[in-house]
Amino acid sequence: MTQSLPKIIPVNELKNTANIMKTCQESSVPIVITKNGYGEAVMMSIKLYEEMFAKMQAATLINAGVEEVDNGATPVDGNAFFKSMRAKYEK
Image 1: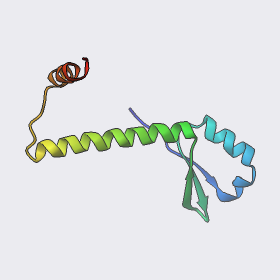
Image 2: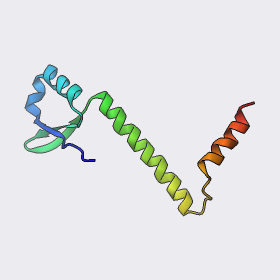
Image 3: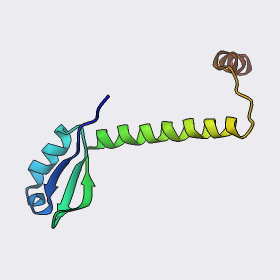
Image 4: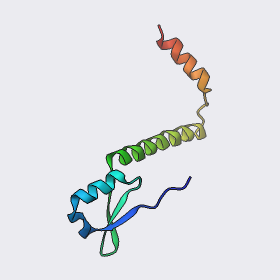
């Protein structure tokens, strides 16, 4: 799966806030704001931000689990885990 490159706009285009907000809402990638040709800031829709944040949280949890196993934790079968949770909480 390939991800599109971010949109790039110069800071002077921020004067047209209505157009920028529309671009944010319609864009599936972050918008990089440049000043003198260098990246200065990033804008994105709330929806895109929430999606990216959820992916980062999931990756953090997965990496923590892998690190636990690497440090000697015993992996638990998913079905066995859910079965024990149902037995514990479905009373």
